[in-house]
Length: 176
Length: 106
Image 1 (cartoon, chains in turn red, yellow):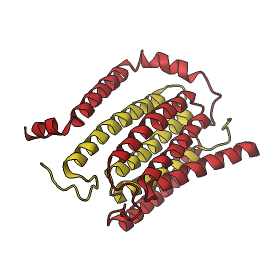
Image 2 (cartoon, each protein chain N blue to C red):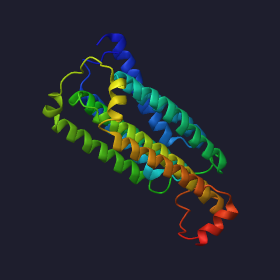
Image 3 (cartoon, helix red, strand yellow):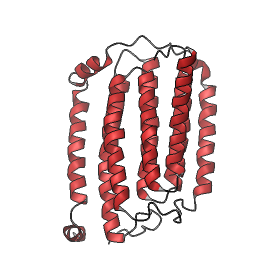
Image 4 (cartoon, chains in turn purple, red):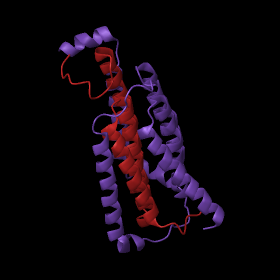
């Protein structure tokens, strides 16, 4: 790896981790929503490092595009998301730090225990035309997964429309 | 970018760190939308793990990418339904803080 690649990789890692930290810790939730953008871009950058360009495009379109917009839209429709005086953590915050730090420590110990197994992994192969292979495989071997996914999307869309209907109709529906 | 010298360790450790960050947000945030954002962090960490393991250990079959495709679809569906639920709760109770929503039927 050249010095330039190392520098790029380090900055990508730092950007991803810092923006993830900001998403969970910033008090102004609109800012937290915008911090999602560098996080999603950073994960997309790692897909590029792993030479899966199709997933990078998908990450940009779906996460950095659609999910970001929906999250910000929902934030702007609710109250008290920009007020710096409103507490944004519950009383479990200290316990949450302890729990997630101990989980991270546990995972790191486990990963280093498994070191021989993981270190035996081969280096990356030169990139093939993964997008083309994926398109063929999705309509041959994985066609059931593909169709189930579309059924899931359809039902999620219907469910979202049903849940977000006008208040009056919704209250009547809730009585049933 | 050529990543020939990059060990698989790097990606697993990064995913572990991101998973821990997401879990912290998941437990400590009060606002339901912020909880959903933390879930997105956790899901992205899992996706990164899927792709890294696939790329390093089984690069000749496509299970890793198909898994990630399904996960991304599930995440999109989860965001759509989750936001609809949050807006519906907000209309009924005028708050989306998960520690104030203690009512199970309106």
